Image (cartoon, rainbow, N blue to C red; front, side, top):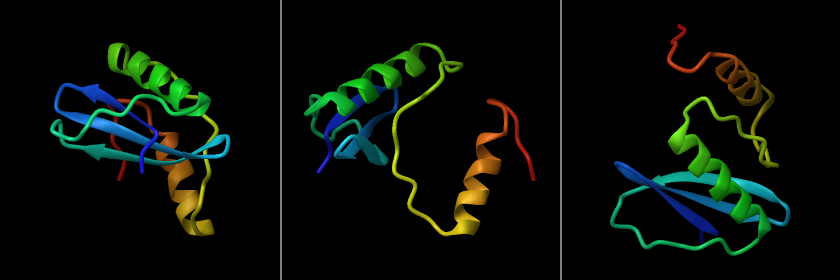
Length: 89
């Protein structure tokens, strides 16, 4: 189901890919099985997640599939504009 998992202090982050793009990112319990990268996109996702784990200001530039309504995509764009550590209402 997932193409790679990355350990974080309180969870694992799992990434699924399809072709050359990330299609899902999910939080899993630490007890979930470890999955090594199954393809180049998964390996790059692992590298970027590990960079983020060490430096929360690290930037992501993974190719992703955005599957949502126009409203959902507008909300996601607005969420991406919020600086790390800040909140908006």
